[in-house]
Image 1 (tube, each protein chain N blue to C red):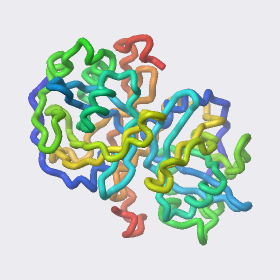
Image 2: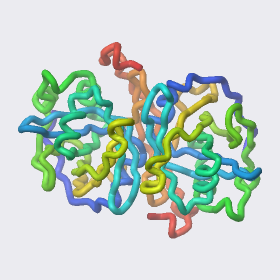
Image 3: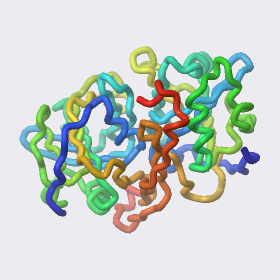
Image 4: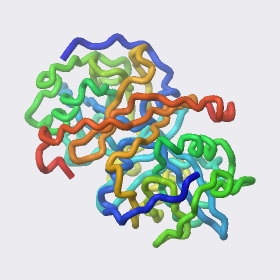
Amino acid sequence: MKAGKRKADFPVEKVRRYLEPGPIVLVSSQWQGRANIMTLGWHTVLEFSPSLVGLMIASGNHSFEMIRRSGQCVINLPTAAMVDAVVGIGNCSGVDTDKFAAFELTAVKARHVQAPLIGQCHASFECRLHEDALVDRFNFFIFEVVKAHVAPSPKHPRTLHYSGDGAFMVAGNVISRRSMFKPEMLV
Amino acid sequence: MKAGKRKADFPVEKVRRYLEPGPIVLVSSQWQGRANIMTLGWHTVLEFSPSLVGLMIASGNHSFEMIRRSGQCVINLPTAAMVDAVVGIGNCSGVDTDKFAAFELTAVKARHVQAPLIGQCHASFECRLHEDALVDRFNFFIFEVVKAHVAPSPKHPRTLHYSGDGAFMVAGNVISRRSMFKPEMLV
């Protein structure tokens, strides 16, 4: 895997630009000195400010306890070029695999959390646990994005959208209907 | 708008095929004899069986109280060809607009809920409220999909993925990596 992409700070209240389209993401975590990565497709934006995101993290994942205990994670946005790493990461376990090493990914130190950013991803969002009321019943974590790092270009990277059974849809072409929106809807 | 598409029954435990990619959806509701539609991008799959989906419905929407009081809705999947209706629906209010009439959409009777299906959409998922513990604090509703209707083709319709500021990404091309998955991961 090539070296990491340069990133710039990005306003946390605008992370919906990257997450609302529903891409598959790579969630990195760290607990007791060990880092891990999981592939995740079940997430939603919940609020602009504070910048809240909900993640459904199945409890069978090695990352589940690491994220619950640390109360932190990083949501990383891979591009379509990373599809083989995305699949590989989702099909092995952090119990017996150092995924950063196995997939030649660069662990970059985060600013506000222990979990590392993944250097090769287009964007990385540092998260702190905001609410765990639905974790026991639904494995649903609500995180606050406390820091966002985004590669300056392209504005709309080609992203992967998982539809099950091994198939990803690729989002790429953009349709703008900006002129049809009421100004107050253009947040 | 053209007449509705023919739909077939679809297994509710497999609706992730259409919702996990993160498309913009049209949520229809009915309360006290009046139907409404809202455009929504903040949703996530939460469980295969029961088939659970979480929707963040901002409380300022006319649909919010209709859905909260009825405890029901239908999640409809529009294709890219419906982009102008999707934008129009999101930029007017059910307070003073009959959106089915205004956007020439066909209200089709659902099987298990009062809210109508939108005939022109590729798929429609009838939903009953499953859990409202996070509605007051986060406007987050957990629904169970109790009936799914899907057009038989195409298998991967071109869908709209909203990234804010009036711009939609279109998901269309499919990359399959089925052979790289462990069999148990191919649910």
